[in-house]
Length: 436
Image 1 (tube, rainbow, N blue to C red):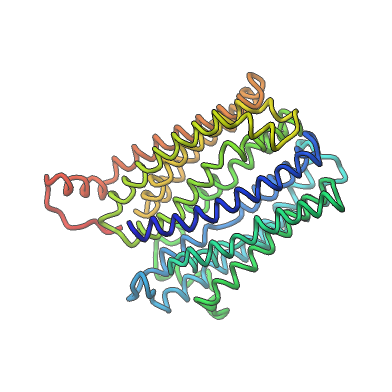
Image 2 (image 1 turned 120 degrees about the vertical axis):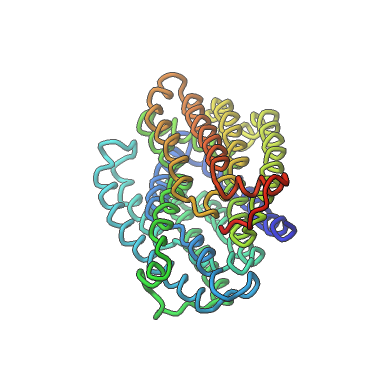
């Protein structure tokens, strides 16, 4: 638990720096581009991140799961296990890039029929999608998390917000349009990928001869099931919110998408915090085995307190933040921001529950629990926007998050390994520690 809190501390420090730098770029972009221009920028970024999120496998989880196997210890993993897991992860990353570029071409070619972007911005959109795919960095992130090098990862990841903020300043000075800000964003993606790889190879230098899509599945029969389950769950978590922005733009126009993006960035900062908690918690749960439930329970209690405080801050300081950081047109999105902050608090509570399910080998269950509410939200989004604009879209997100967290809780209650652990804690049975 001490190491977990230390790792979360490093991750939160990085998130804090990221948040400050994001406010710089948000202030510059919204004031330079205006509501509609920022909407165009938001749609391009959302499309690139959605495609990358759907194509990208969560290879950091594979490295943590299979790299921690073998005869090694948490502090000194088995080199052969790390080598095989890394080769599998890198092969999947290459597959992601190929699939993603093909998907990007198809989506951009069909986008004029459904996406509210001027025709001259479509080549820029495709270019950003390609850069985002080439900057996939889950494998080096996994190598650092496997060895609990969260401090190193935090310093490497700080490159992204720093480059993004510096690029936004240069865009305002020399290219104050959508292209300038997209180029700044793309440059930050490339820079952080390079920084993470440099940090990762200091610990484990990947062996190109280990590249293989078959070695790990041959050793672990359930490997592909875990790969597809975590990929789909990760896609929903990472790309789902980008799809929401794209559909808001489709149904409500670029201006509504721009305002919703600002509301989401300010109000759903807790979603990023939830992902931070999940990333730090997953390796610990894999190693903790029989103590996983108690660790997840403690983190959920901490998350509850943090979530309530964050919602209070959003309610009391949201109007000031919108008035200070953006143009007057964005102030109409205050209540959408508050609703999204509540959704973020719910996600924060659910992060430990979802990680517990995945660490227990129930990635497929976690995906289903996440997918069904997300599908309902997307189906009802058009009606929600017609009902109450950005607030309606925010309620759809809140409903999806709430249903998912309830589903995680019910799934854990029905997990036999977890029930044994609960009974042991209460002294009702004497069973061997569950194998996760």
